[in-house]
Each structure stands twice: as structure tokens, then as C-alpha cells.
Image (cartoon, rainbow, N blue to C red; front, side, top):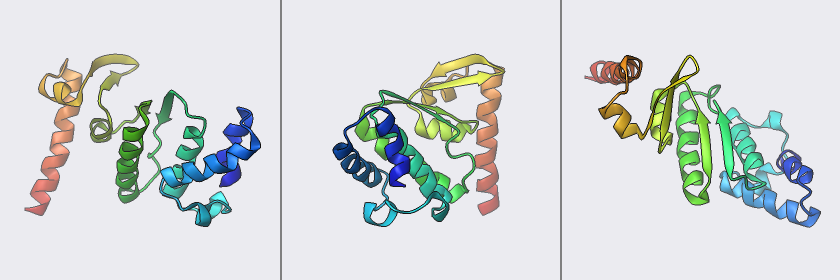
Length: 160
């Protein structure tokens, strides 16, 4: 894990003495105890822990903009929700731009302060989640919102 996170810092030619401390800070940031995880191999980690290590590696060189392309796509629903909350916590303290790509409208609206809705490579709407919901730009955006509401209704009907 330490070598994995340190890789980008080595490429960026960080001083060796700084790398160890930065790995420690990054592991703490993603809620992985450095004493427990620093010397583990990726195969010893859960999918969620592997995602956290990847996030720590990406953040280690303090990028101004980060592109996260479907980072939670292959993770179970419980871990996905926990990692979404972690990402919100981390992002809130960093003052950095995260570009988060997802096909899940609920995830986009939960994580995004501004959302770009695209269809077949064309931007259909760019706005805050609240304004998109209140004023969908076209039929495609409206149908996307309707599908999210239908999912909510399904869960409400199933529980009641």
C-alpha cells in the first residue's frame, strides 16, 4: 500500500523523507490506519479499501483538479454509500475540483454541487442538482429525473 501511494510522489520527484510522512497523512485522510495498512498488499484489501488507497494515491501530489471516472462502479451498495460519504468529507476539506463521472443520477446529485447531464456525448444540461430537478432542460433530462423518482417510489411502495 505504501509503495502504491508513494508511486506518484516518486514520479513527481518528492524528497524521499517527505514521502513517508505524506503516505501517513493520505492513509489517515481516507480513514485507513497507517499502522495496519501501510505494509499490506492490494490483494489483502477489500474493494472499498482498494478504492480508498487509489484515492489516497491520486491525492498524494495535491492535484488542483481530479477526474474520478466511475470510481465506485464495481463496489457493493453498502460500501458505495460509505465511500460516497467519505468522498464528500474529503472533498469538503480540500478546496479542490473533483470531476466525478457516473451513470447513476442519484450519485451525481448526492456528490455534485454542479452536474452536467449528457446524452450520446452531448451536454443536455449543466446546473445545480436542485435547478435540474426543478427545471429539466429537455425531455431526456426530464425522463432521467422521472426514472430516479420511480426508483424512490418503488422503495416507498415496497416498505409500506
